[in-house]
Length: 288
Length: 272
Image (tube, rainbow over all chains, first blue to last red; front, top):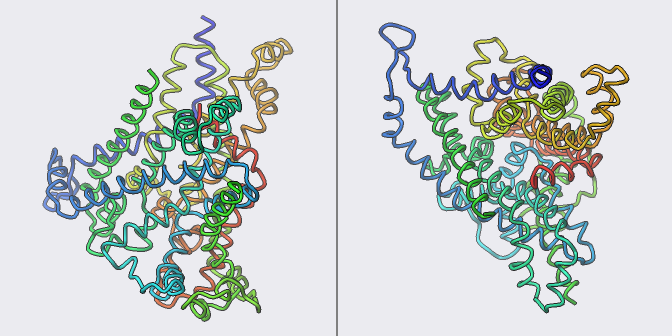
């Protein structure tokens, strides 16, 4: 009896959050799912049920296929780079060396820059007459096209996203490293383990949990990259930087294909949830 | 010797991360016509301005970006206030009571983590259009108020509050809202600040959503206005850089002011 009453009171406190989560997160996913089964009807006006035809249209669409391939390539490149870089920087910036706190702060600073603002900043950096080419000229290297070259555009995006991302993910790993008991570190030192050996055999296994969290959260956030594409490249040149999130956006607004775009949203959400679930399973398997 | 090596390595990496920001700050004190004057090749003048001018900042605060920055501040502040009320109350419901379905309720909150907001922004914007919430502050604020991470963080903290305190409060005649308001909230300042930071940063950094829902002059937020400015044919880069500085320095000041809580919230969301 008492438990039931407690449940009701708890529900009252939970209500605003549950309603907002249901309406603002889960609702739109279901809305997209429903809309993805319909199409605008020119003859009758309004919409008609078309089953899976939006999905088959989408899967047959050349631009969509390219966007999937580009997103996969991007995912496979950026996540290992960012996770490894964050880990190495976290190790570096937890050593006792003069000035470490200051250098660490400089790496963290860019995380305050909103992604859209950093995209704007890097659009100027990457201009033909911008600072990136100025630096190359100083080093005696030839001028590079960056965003207008189909082989350089993804690396250029990865650099700008890492500029904000690496410092942020590094914070989680620094917190994990600082939680490692001092005795373990000292024991490894007494055993005569070198710096590299300590990092691989002591630090790495002990920050497995924050590392797995960073990998999951980073993968999901990189799957949804939008601002740099929309601001810098518009998916170009020739669609080689057309990441899925931008593809959904152009399909919905530039092409006006809202129902097909909803089908794409459904696939994107499903893919995201699958990645998160798979990675959490990996994590759990690791523990057993 | 090894320490010196590490220090040099750290310095090089730190400076590489810092160069873009330094360049942005320098150019914000330089007329837009001179942005690209000292770049080929780089010299010390690329990063230092001997005759700084405030003209970009004057133009900024008198113009569209200034207004957009105010909109960002308003939207973020409203998100923090309403969001904290919603999230803290939810966390209380998940932590302070024993009941069947507690696990289920927590599961729903976790599910909200898994549906990433940007992925569902397009269908949600279609729904908001039907509800006439386009170009309203309500429409901009609403998606930020229910934040799974913030609820998670607050719940963790609330679970540590001893049951005896609650019982004592109940015996003194406090209702459940009283327990929440006069026992849980005052004891949870660090978690509330950490959650408030999450709510603030989510809203301040958002771009997809305000681009979809609020682009008229009265509701446009800073990042969207800055991106518009950059996309024009004859861009005044001095103004762009001044805008970038302002939009970065505001969250930076907030993070720096609450640094301790920021790091705490980061570490507890990653480890638990």
